[in-house]
Image 1: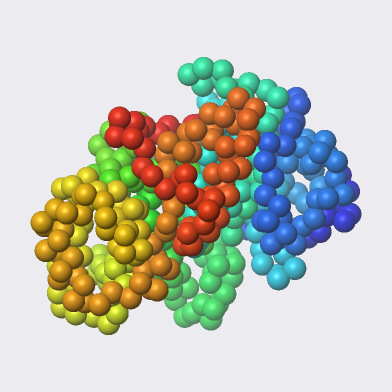
Image 2: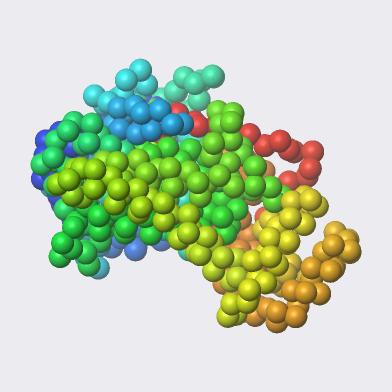
Length: 477
Ligand code: AMP
Ligand code: MG
């Protein structure tokens, strides 16, 4: 397909890496593609204009049925620890269309998810169902508007083919836009090959692509580790701030760029409980809300292991250095987390008692089954009329808290007024799979400005009726 007028500016720098890193491969064409949703705002940000295309041409493009000129599509090699177990993986249902360079000279992977079998598919069909792809669209866009580094969604196209899961479901392809798809699992793949040259090349490439300011580092492996650690812990702090539970923080879902990636069984917490988990397959709560900081450290330890041979020629020394770096995760997280909670509570400066004030509020919320988002929203807005706040423990806490003179302007910037509530997401997905896209569009509109009170968000702020619980999510693979 001609790329005229659209503004595509493709590069394929990833294919300059050693051959083991990727397999040139094409999406498997689908029967009858149809655009379900398209992200015009994101297209504009990318410097792309699809207005010259007919709906049919757009559907062909975003299903991979027709590939733009000047790019080479490929599937990436990677491995990963899934629920603690090491596995060789790779893009089993995804194809990178290319790296688009925006007018601002930013590089984005454009990737199709659900685009058919690849050499990495194992027993999978390479496909995806419409519901889970729209779910990724909703949540990734919500995360973006919440100010959290994330991959984004450019389009969802129905394939006109069914996919067989527990039942037969309509198939779909998501176009994902990411800073890159390099993950901890990519490093684990290279480490498992024991290919030092490839490891060196991947480190250099990752630094150039995501941390160019570190290009001159004397110890690139160690420097990269610290940089990734910083961004990953920042990301987890964001998750904790907005009550987000990723649900499947396997090392293949931990991006080196620091973006949040892969929205499968994720969901937002309603009432505050660190043990909250929604994923039907996370039996032990490995990826529960309150476990995410520990899991981030665990994942970073797996990342550190891959870097050992390049941190020091004395391998024992390399292990010692990296162990110390990994162990710092807890302290760094604690500091970042405290800073974040102070902002949620509008506390300026630092006072010894802040930590205990924060802990007491969370304990009260846990005990009272208080909604996480709405408690902070009510504190921010000064709307504490709900009978729940008549509780003596809360009032005692609030007396102490008010003495801290909270700054509401700070609170407004860190406490969302709206999140994608589970029941609202389900409602929109159900309607969309029954060909009614209105609820999906209304939900997306409601999530666009989460830090301002907008008219559009009014019907999206309440938690689900208690009878709706327990809520469960599924991987959708
Ligand atoms: P995810 O859970 O989406 O992070 O996927 C984990 C791994 O399983 C990746 O290597 C995917 O490419 C692969 N995978 C997931 N679903 C499918 C599928 N339907 N067909 C083939 N591979 C899949
Ligand atoms: Mg994944």
